[in-house]
Image 1 (tube, helix red, strand yellow):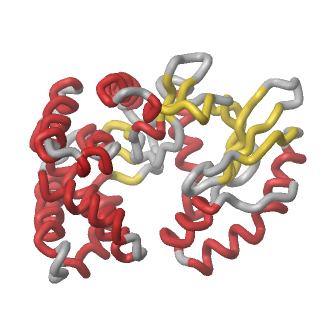
Image 2 (cartoon, helix red, strand yellow; image 1 turned 180 degrees about the horizontal axis):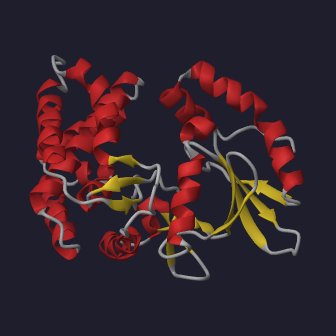
Length: 299
């Protein structure tokens, strides 16, 4: 199957794992796709674009003619963990895992990728998002291999230290790192989390109105999982004259609707926004960084 990998995939893999690592895997991708299609007896329809940030998604037909989606991710993006989480949820609140099609490949039920919660008005989108993520918060499987919130955020916090003295991000970075230290010291929940939950990760389906996709699963407290959702449509918040107060109201509304402590949600929202902002600075995406850091400053 001949194709060019979507540019969003190329850009994100290079930024996250380095140009050399990304280029090596991307160079093997066309051959890998062909092997997976043959192995699973799938007929390809088209590659989804812009598609995923860390995986290639191909719309396919199974041997019985039924529609499905083939997702292929590099081993360093840990698709095995996604497979484990999807199998454990078994379609409850999340896309259904139909089959494992070889290393790094998942055959998933076909949703409607062009229709996410971002297509809804903000208030309705947040309501549906809350109802969806609530279903995912279950006890993890026994003897699981998922990271904890403490472990993942420790890895993320390490490169943030370089920005403690930064004129733009220094004060916020110090506050975010201090918040993380306090939060992980008192985290008592060990639920299975989506890990990257936001409006764009919830797609329309036929089996259920809305289903989550693209988990980066880990275990820990629910407030961590909500934190990325709080800053959805951040560009609209920043553009609005009432953006700061709207962001704080969103924290409180989401926390209250899902019985999560407001201050813990605020703390994790601060940490995750600053972590994303400093990562954007490192990658040279200054406009994205400015949006994220302005949002973080409101918290």
